[in-house]
Structure formats: C-alpha cells, structure tokens
Amino acid sequence: MKFHVPTLDEFESAQKAFEANEPRDLFYRTASELVDLALRHATRLSVPEALAVLLQTWNKAFYRYKKFDSQHFADIKHLLDRHHQRLATLRLRSIESLEDEEQVTIGQIFRDFEEVLGPVGAAKCLHLMAPKFFPLWDRAIAEAYGHPLSKRGENFGTYFRFMEVAREQVKILGGEQAIGRNPLKALDEYNYCKHTKQWI
Image (tube, helix red, strand yellow):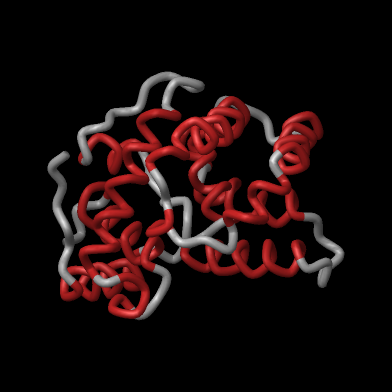
C-alpha cells in the first residue's frame, strides 16, 4: 500500500493556507465543542443538534438533494442511539490504536452512517463523535488516495483502507506529541488544501 507521508513542515504550510482561505473552520470548532458539551449533558442541545451544525455547513452538497427534515434528524438520532456504546469507547481512542481485525465492526458502523448521511457526511459525523479515531475525507481526497467513492452504502471497505493509511501516516510522523495537535485534523487540513483546493 503506497501513500505519501506529509512532513511536519507541510502540515504547517497547510494549516496556514487553511486558516487564510477556509472560514468554515469556525463551524468545525463550534460543532466540536457543542458535541462535547452535549455528550456531557452540559448544554440544552442534543448530540444530533450539535452534529447538524457541521453537517449543514461542511456537507452542503449532500443537502441539495436531500431535506434536513424531522425524519432525517430522527434517522441521525437512531444511528447515535444504536451505536452509542461503541462510539463512546472509540471517542477515547486514537487512530494509532486501530487494529486490522476491527474491519468488520468499524465497517458496520460506517455503513450504517453512510446509508443516512452518504460517505462524506458519515466520515464527518463519526469524526465529531471520535475526533482522534475517525479521519475526515471528501470525494477529491478519497480519489487522490486511490479510493474513488462508489454509490452510497458501498464505501465501508474503502473507508477502512483510508483509516489504515491515516494510521500509518500518523505513526510515521510521531503521533500527536510530534504534530502538536489532533493528528487527524492536521491531516485533513493537509489533504483538503492539497487535493481538494490545490492551495499548496
């Protein structure tokens, strides 16, 4: 499995480009904090409401063809209820702890979320629920890594392979201690700036 491992200097360049050109990062930071507060019952907002902040800003393309109505909201809530225990455990883990034997269980979680949110929305939602375990992607990033997305419901194996690549990238770079912040957020900024926007 061949893949590029960005340098720490490339991460720094990507972070500067991302901050200069992508104002929507505010919604990521807001949604991340709201999810944390909702999980701790420290806000009146529910976890699905907190997730909606990111889904309706970072995943707008998906909602051109699908309404974010009460049924969609109920579907998200059902997903979170169904996988609550597993997601609570994964929230405490890093991508470096991913085991190859977890493909079936992780694949099932991703497949369920993908059926409701599409492959890009599923990754975004799962990342907010376990931000150091589930990497972010979009169609351009997946294609750049040699994993072009298929139709909804068929990308769970592709996403797991993307997770394996992210795990090795983070390990080679030295993890959060070397990177100085959430490695998966740093990696996403690099991928987004390089492959989605060509800012670097």
